[in-house]
Image (cartoon, rainbow, N blue to C red; front, top):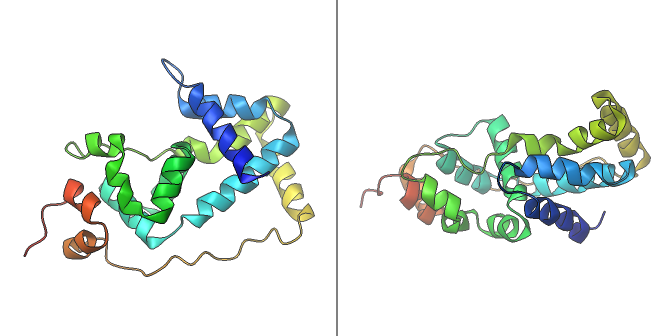
Length: 189
């Protein structure tokens, strides 16, 4: 699946959200309207985009926004960035501190609300596959077969960049100044 087609699926799902309909449900329905092969290709593209933002600087942004961030929560945060759509994903991928411009992040900062973490988006392909086949286990088998049939489908490790101490306020203010200004007390001068 081409990246543009992947983002079209995300945008279609986003356009089908509203009163009483959340993004992940719309995404599952959009995927379930496609063939099984499309769902596999969507998952492959999702995994590539998800993995590409598996970096320390993005994790630090998640740590600030979430008031802490475990391994599992970081997976959910990256899924949430994808759910925001291409424009916000690319902004965050290029410079995670730009998330300080996102309306949900700004609104959540004073209250410490847990925003941008979207666990169920990680499993949209499996849920869509289950809608088609009636059996969630079918997705695991189909995914294994899909990966085995793709030469070079093994993922290289992503360079996470430079590790740093998320609990050091001065370091966070230096690396993510706008997010730190929203979520941390001012750095000591």
